[in-house]
Length: 105
Image 1 (cartoon, rainbow, N blue to C red):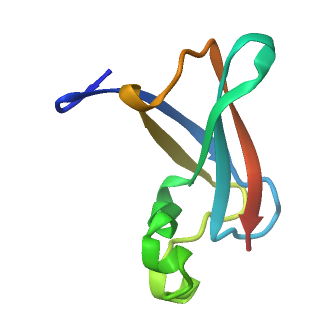
Image 2: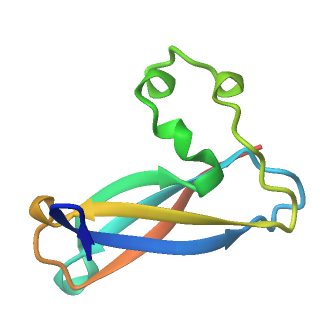
């Protein structure tokens, strides 16, 4: 896929909140896998409603979660996710995997 002047690899999907309570964010780990399903590159991101949590000031502790004004995912509701790898930054890989690292109430 092309993203402006750079080629990208885009992972997209949907997740569902099956926890029975509202969630503020779901932190996901995106892994590109080489032979034998060994991760050759990994990074993390959040569901679409919580993508602002990748903000440098939030990650550095300079902003609180309340400052970020993230819309919760209601119990039983769905949200999308997406993650972009720039082709120039990734080694050869065979497949990818997505893991849930944590969910924040």
